[in-house]
Length: 207
Ligand code: MN3
Image (tube, rainbow, N blue to C red; front, side, top):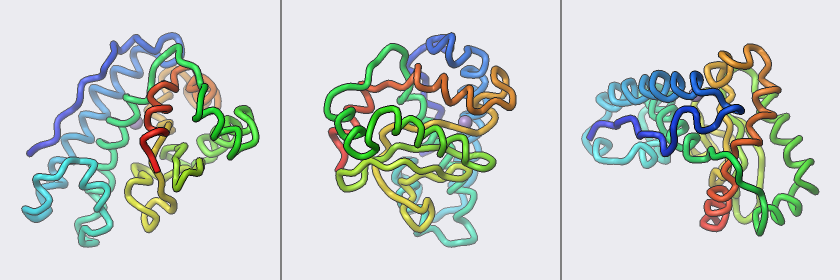
């Protein structure tokens, strides 16, 4: 069962002027497609019991993969899963409210303090990676991961666990065309495209 590139639920220009059309198109149709292609190659090295799992199921069990075959799966299937999730977290024009806002205020002190913590994690991730807001046993946490690691991979790999609520891709390919070296400016624009309605749904469904 080969992995395939999931279509976006919106047009490449839907997040303008914050996330530009050209970056979205290249990021999805080229970068994500390459992860899909290489994920399928990485999966060929695994035994048959792995072949009918979804990409997310593979990633949740990646620590079980023998060490000599683990890294390509971790990187390529991880890249596929992370991008598939990232696209679904983005939408213009929603507002943080309700129980998610209350939990952010409870766990970070204020929405502004949460944003500062998240921006610091995203800006401070050395090299390529992702910054996450996760819910773990009822509590919200911010942390970043290297390369294509995700908290779904578990504590032994990601260094923390939890259900992803929002995420930002801080690989240079996510922002270089529009922002060049200015990762901090890209992170500021990110707040204009977070889909807080979907974040609320994930928050409600998570432990
Ligand atoms: Mn990316």
